Structure formats: structure tokens, C-alpha cells
Picture 1: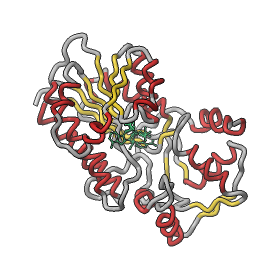
Picture 2 (picture 1 turned 180 degrees about the vertical axis):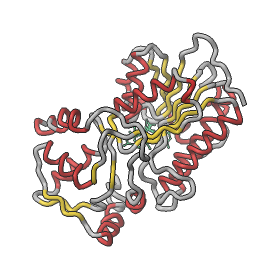
Picture 3 (picture 1 turned 45 degrees about the vertical axis):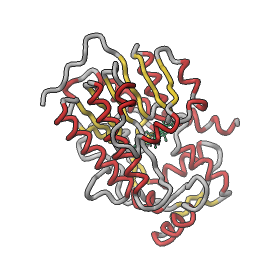
Amino acid sequence: MQVRQPSFGAKKIMLLGGTGFVGRALAGALSQAGYCVTIPSRHVHRHRDLALNPGVRLIDRGQAASDMATVRASSSWAELMADHSVLINLVGILNEQKHNGVGFEQAHVTFTQTALAAASTAGVSRYLHMSALGADAVNGRSFYLRSKGRAEDWAHTFGEQNGIGVTSFRPSVIFGPHDSFLNRFVQLAALMPGVFPLACADALFAPVFVGDVVAQFMSALDTPARIGQRIELCGPADYRLRELVAYAAQTAGQPRLILGLPDWASRVQARVLELVPGKPFTRDNYASLQTPSVCSAGCPRQPTRLEAVAPQYLQQRRRV
Ligand SMILES: NC(=O)c1ccc[n+]([C@@H]2O[C@H](COP(=O)([O-])OP(=O)(O)OC[C@H]3O[C@@H](n4cnc5c(N)ncnc54)[C@H](OP(=O)(O)O)[C@@H]3O)[C@@H](O)[C@H]2O)c1
């Protein structure tokens, strides 16, 4: 089916997940580029500063935002998207309440289905979807990766059938100020003086800078050739998890000896830590880490080196 032509001059973007780590960076870039951005949130009171960006409107969806993950059709969402030409969906979770896949299915698949159905009703012509490296509906090793894969596949199929131009992005782990990856390991290092017992220490990543991820989203908005593409996003180098944790702890002024746990102990750690409030590590995270989070051979790499950016925010932690 032919992709609908966006109405001339329309520059309104609906940004779902715009209050998160990536969303905040993308909202800033969209605002600077002159777009009008609508960001629904369940927790508007926590994110009021976002509305200081010119053109950014934060709207309180309260329960309704969560309902997107459970309710298939939502006419009120279509009304909300009525005058928007682009939908961007960054909504994602790393942990669910129970270990049964239902939470992931709702947050990733049902949410995407509800949002895109509403967008189609509203006449939205372009959709940018955040997936993840390793997402695979069939062969994904975790609920996270399988649900991300199903959502990505569904979005592309729905777009083709309904004349919406879909591009999806498949990043490795994303770093930048306020990330929940390097910062999280520094927090954990503070609790473990001397030695850091690390699960899945040999897991592979190609950390990609949030600024480079944002640049790829921005470029896709203006590049029709990107429609239909599933774009892998990796930084310039691959690392083992043990190298990243050692680097983050050292850079934050808390050098630690990394003790890679054997596989059985990694599984035990996941079972124990998923019972801790905030679920710092779960069985599903363990399963995701069994798939290397690195790009396919020959895939172009994003330019920003971890070592060029991470010290700027990790070293600040020394001063806090
Ligand atoms: N960060 C990474 O390293 C990384 C790597 C690969 C892929 N990704 C993907 O990139 C996306 C953004 O990641 P991030 O790190 O920016 O995530 P984040 O900081 O945790 O933000 C998640 C966002 O999703 C919204 N959200 C979560 N659950 C929701 C639900 N049930 N209903 C409605 N909204 C919900 C939150 O909005 P409110 O709470 O304000 O409503 C928040 O804005 C996710 O899809 C993630 O899977 C991230």
C-alpha cells in the first residue's frame, strides 16, 4: 500500500515514552528542530521541566497511558493524535511484575498495537518504533526479546497494510547522562567494596551514545528511504560486560575487582535479585544477556566513543 502523504507544513509529533532517558533527549532535539511535540505521561508531575522545551506539550494521561497496554482500541487516543503527522513510540520496560511474559506482552506488543491503530484512525502517516538489538519474535531468548520482536514485526506489517511509513530502531545498550546502565553499575559498586561479583560477565555489548540514537531518529524523519527499514544501532566498539562495569566503577572513582560468576551462580543471583525492590537483575534479564547485543557484521557503527562521553557524567558522581 502507498504511504500516505503528510499534510503540507504539518510538524506535530506524538512522542510516547518521551519522559524516559531516550525520550527526554529526543524531545529536546525535536524541540530545537522546530517540531511541536506532544508527550503523554502517567506521571506528569515528575516531568514538568520537559515542557520548558519550546513546542513541547506534556499531557496527563494518568491511568489512560497504562490502559494503552491493556485496551486494544482507544478512540480517545485517536482524538489526541488527530492533528499529528508522526508517531514515535519509545515505550518499553526491562522488568515485569511476574515472571510470565504478560507484562512485557502488554507494554511492548499491546501498547504498540493500540497506539498504531489509534494513529491510523487519526491519519498519522509516519511511525518510528523503538525496538532492541536481539529482538526476535520466535528465537528471542527472553520474554523481553520475544515481545520486542513481536511488536517490531507487527508494526512493520501494520504499516505496510495501512499506508503508514514505519522505521524501527534496534539499539544495543544506550549510554549518556542519566542512563540506567553505567550509572546503575556505579551505584551497585558503591555497595560492594573491593570485589564486584558480576553475573553474565562475558555478555557482549556495543554501547551506543544517546545523542547518536537521537540523530538517527531525527534523520529518519526526513528520509523517506528509511521507511520499511529496521536499523541496528551500535557504538564504535564491542565490550564484555566485565570491561564496562570495571570501566564505569574506575571512572567514578570506585575501582573494583570484577569477579565473573559462573553460570549457575548468575542464575541464582537473578532469582534472588528479582525479589529485591526495583528488581536490579531478573531471570528474564539473565535470559536476554545470553544473546550478544552487538550489530551484524558490516552494519555501520555510530561514531561516539564511550570513553569520550562517559567520564563527563560518571566523574560528576565523585563530586556528589
Ligand atoms: N536504554 C537502553 O539502553 C535501551 C537499549 C535498547 C532498547 N531500548 C528501548 O528504548 C526505549 C526507551 O528506553 P529508555 O531507556 O528511555 O526507557 P525509560 O527511561 O525506562 O523510559 C520508558 C518510558 O516508557 C513509558 N512507559 C513505560 N511503561 C509504560 C506503560 N505501561 N504505559 C505507558 N507508558 C509507559 C514511561 O513513561 P511514563 O512513566 O512517564 O508514563 C517512560 O517515558 C524502550 O523501548 C527500551 O526498550 C533502550
